[in-house]
Each structure stands twice: as structure tokens, then as C-alpha cells.
Figure 1 (cartoon, rainbow, N blue to C red):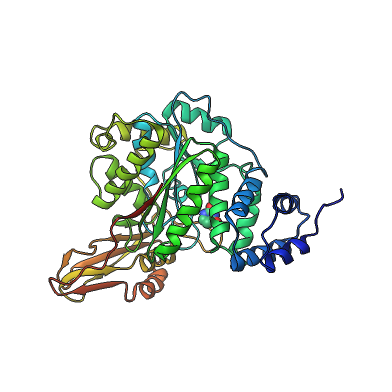
Figure 2 (tube, helix red, strand yellow):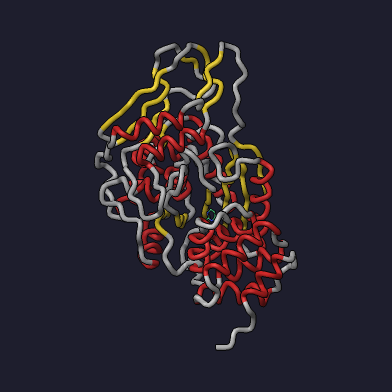
Amino acid sequence: MVEPFAAVDVIKAKRDRRALTKDEIDWVIDAYTRGVVAEEQMSALAMAILLNGMTEKEIAQWTTAMIDSGERMDFSGLPRPTVDKHSTGGVGDKITLPLVPVVAACGAAVPQLSGRGLGHTGGTLDKLESIPGWRALLSNEEMLSVLRDVGGVICAAGDGLAPADKKLYALRDVTGTVEAIPLIASSIMSKKIAEGAGGLILDVKTGSGAFMSDPAKARELAETMVRLGNRAGVTTRALITAMDVPLGLAVGNALEVTESVEVLSGGGPADVVELTVTLAREMLDLAGITDIDPATTLVDGSAMDVWNRMIQAQGGDPRAALPTARESDVITATTSGVVTRLDALSIGVAAWRLGAGRARKEDPVSAGAGVVLHAKPGDVVVKGAPLMTLYSDEPARFARAHQALDGAVDVGPAGSTIERLPLVIGRVD
Ligand code: URA
């Protein structure tokens, strides 16, 4: 086959700040997926995009080309409206776990393709895999069948969905080119658009524990993704939410499942409940379901019922005891006063070092490892009282976790200013 372009010319065009044409973009994505554009060439192009940016038209075309590298899912045969959610990820962000059953219990269908954790942010699949027997890999037919029977499904994205993104994301991860808004937005939205839900809510996090710690960058990412979704026919909205402090009290795989089940039982930490209900309201509005308050599903048992059926449908036993770590270590307050700051990134790195996360994508994770917080900003503590408990299977990991936590918590005298962002910082329609 005679190739219509040379990769080096496309790289030079972006290096010299020229906007790429539709034909160049379609070709470069297709040729990269076929192995004709080499990894080193795509890595140079990704770096040129990171440094020189892309126009809105280029980002939209890049996204379309990545969608067209694979299959599109089709939920049009379902009797319920479909609506999905994506979070850019954070520390203790277990919201998908209670959110999917809540929205399904209100009458929408939620096809949630999720990922595994890399670095200090956890992955939804790693969390659910701590439930004995639960299986993340479903065929498209199995996914559709769980969705039809239960109303919600959380599973791994199959290899057929945006394969160009799978290859490119792995390359960006090792070439310092993850943090480019055109590449992040097209990567996330190609998968979400190919998945084919009618509506999409994006939870774009900002603060130390988020991918985009700068609020202005988080807004730019949110606006770019909302435009891409709406342009492709998926009604898309974004909330920009706080990730300066971990969500809830539990950080770590099985620990977060336990906290999610507490929320589904009508309890759990206030911030987890509030964000779950806020996102559920947005999703139901996108699905055109306005006659039910999602908060009621947490108290009447209907969301818990969906959760149990959803876990069972994927081989899991929702009543089985979850794995626990072999060792624990308590960190106590060194002074009395009020907690004024609790740094999400430090807690995320500590949980990761305790074994809850992975450094390379082939590494296993520990189901029981992580951190349970006993105090959050605004809480009063007395000297010697527990601030947090660390859990790990290997006691040798505690020292490295302690290093990550150095300076993570500030305790000030009563009346001190509490440093934290509001839970919902902004929205993009
Ligand atoms: N998640 C993705 O799927 N892609 C990115 O580029 C970043 C986060």
C-alpha cells in the first residue's frame, strides 16, 4: 500500500505550529494503529502537540479518528435512556461505586467502562476486584445483558474500543506527554463517545490530588471535553470538583468498597453522599428523568438492591467478607487543636506505597492496603488521638508511607482558618 503522507512531514508540520489537516490526522492515527507510523515518530508528534497545542477543529478530528480506529457500541435497543459518568480521578474517589446503582435505581441505564489505577489515584476495577469472585472482563453481549437485567454495569473496556487510544496512552505514559489538554480530552472522549451513551457527566477534579491541580487548567479541560461530546451528539456536562482533600475517609481498594456499601446503606461520609447525589441529579436530568430524588434510593434500599444484583451478575458475592491487610499502624496527633489542612496527594502516595496502587501496569495491587482517616479539615483533635490508620500486608512499607505523609496534616489552634476548596467548584454546560 502506498501511504499518502510521510510521518516525518506530519511531525514537522506540528513542530512548526501548523494546524494538521483532516486527511493528515486520519492518516496518522490509522497508520499508527497499523504499525506504519513508528512509536518514536508518534512520540515526537505527541511532544509537538504538547508544546504547540491544537485548534478545536484538530482536537475534534483527532478524537473522531481515534473513535474510528475501533468499534462503536450500540445501546439503542435498551428500553431505558443511557447516561454515563467519567471522573478524571482522585484520592478516595469511589463515587462510581454508589453512583451507578443510584442512577440505575431511578430508571436510567448506566454503562460504565472503567479503568485500573496507575500512580497515586485508584482505579474502579481494582476496587471492585477486592470483592471475592467479581469479574471485570465481560464480552459486549454480557455487558448488554447485565445492563438490560440490572440497569447498571461496571466493567473493563474491551480491546475493540478506540484501540488507537490504548496504544497512544501507553506511549504517552512513558514519554512525558500525558499532560496535554488536546491529548487528554481526545483520549477520554474517544472512549466515551465510542461507548455510545446518550448523556455524559464529567467530574473534572482539581487540587493537589488531581491530575489537573490548577483550577484554570481543569476548567479548560472540562470545556474542551464538553464541546467534543456535544459536537459528537452526546449531551455532555461537566462539574469541576475538589480534590485538595481525599473524598470520604477510606483510601484503598477494599476499604473504599466498604465505605461505598455504607453509603448505599444510607450512611457513609457526608462528602461522598453529597457528590454521589449531586452527580446522580445531573445524570438523571440528562436522561430526562425528573420525577425522582436520587437521595431516596440510598434510604429505601433500592440502590443497594441494584448493587447486590450488579455484583452477583459479574460473579461476585456482595455478602462475602472483604480482604483485610495483615498489619496496621496508627498515626496520632502531636498537638491538640483543629485540623486545618489534609493534603490529598500525600495521602494518595502513602496508600500507593502501602500497596493499594501500582507503579507499572502489570503490577498486582493489594486489596486490603490503604489509609483510613479519623479526622478531616474542620475536625477537632486532641494530642495523642488517632489521625489516621495505615494498612499494609508488608510492615516494611510503613516507613515509606510515613515519608509521604510528612507535612500532610496541619493542626492549628481553635478558630484557625480551614484551608479547603468547596466540593463543587464550577460547572460547564
Ligand atoms: N485518562 C484517559 O483515559 N486518558 C488520558 O489521557 C488521561 C486520563
